[in-house]
Image (cartoon, rainbow, N blue to C red; front, side):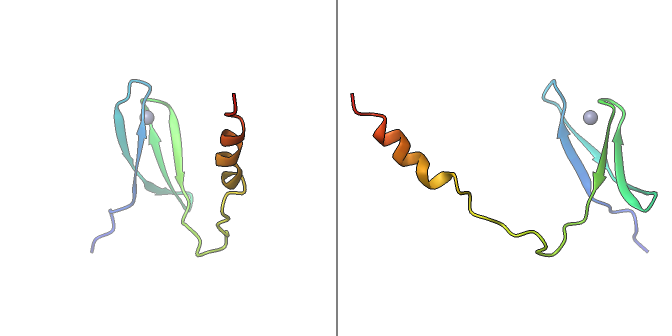
Length: 72
Ligand SMILES: [Zn+2]
């Protein structure tokens, strides 16, 4: 039986060191705690398409704005 492979979370410390912490099941949730930076991570299962992905409404105008401002 193979039960210990929970997702691991990588995060970056202020000194640019990448630290991996492994999630453990606690209180019905998967959590990981990094004592070095005193941060707790909670893993949330991705839900199947309950969130729609919108195209950014900001992007289409960006190029035009730059072009129109470059006239001198
Ligand atoms: Zn950390």
